[in-house]
Image 1 (cartoon, rainbow, N blue to C red):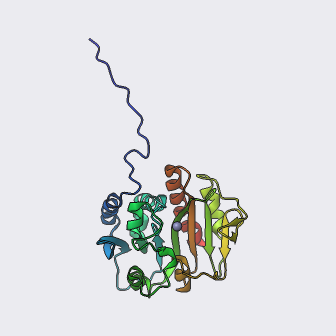
Image 2 (image 1 turned 90 degrees about the vertical axis):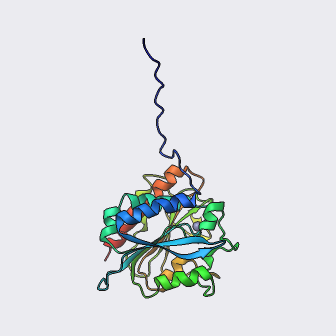
Amino acid sequence: MKTATTPTMPVHPLANHRAHDYRALVREWRVLAKEAGLKMQAFARVGGQLPVYVLRTKDAANDRRPTIYLSAGIHGDEAAAPWGLLDWARENVALLREGRFLIFPVLNPHGLILNTRADQDGADLNRSFNVPEHPLITVWRQLVEGREFSLALCLHEDYDGQGCYLYELNPRGPVVGHAILNDCSLVLPIDQRKRIDGRAAKGGLIVRRMLPEMPGHPEAIVLHLMGTPLTLTFESPSEFSLHDRIEAQKTFIRSALEHGLRRG
Ligand SMILES: [Zn+2]
């Protein structure tokens, strides 16, 4: 007698994906931290004791190498950024072991859980980096101050975005953003607007040699003021598919490391 077989359903790449499940994301980072030899620490607690984590290369006393700074999840409604960072890290364990890194996987966990831009106090964390009395920023500063960064990547998304775009804060070196966006264009279109968020853009790139006037400082500006030679803020378009946005974020990190560290 023949038995009926159930056809096997193909597994979608986002099966079981939980974009706003902070605890799941933290669990994944814990596993990864062990594999990659990174120290993972809750450096702050926000809104009802929610831990905020940092991962860093275990410090060796004689290690003078500049650090690569990676951060995501300042805005909680930009889920592809933290998941893209995690996916990139999973695929680059050897690189994480070799290099020197400081990683903030989700700076606004309250926002991620609630799918909101603002933090637990209703504030835009990315306009608070020059507010010395901000409790999270105070401890963030203690972690970054005195370090030399070779490159800083800040990962974001934009619901107005018509494609990927990039802010390049680059006081000295040759522009790298076009080459990076070229790589990202294989995954998602590049935002071709001539003005993005009130600033002149070309092929999705907004280059800043000088500091813009802003009432509240974003993370990138503070990293720039600390002397970081290249700070890149990437934006993927939130209205596109989550899978593609995560891929775009991964592609950005890979390409930014390749082009950003190779220059001069
Ligand atoms: Zn953002």
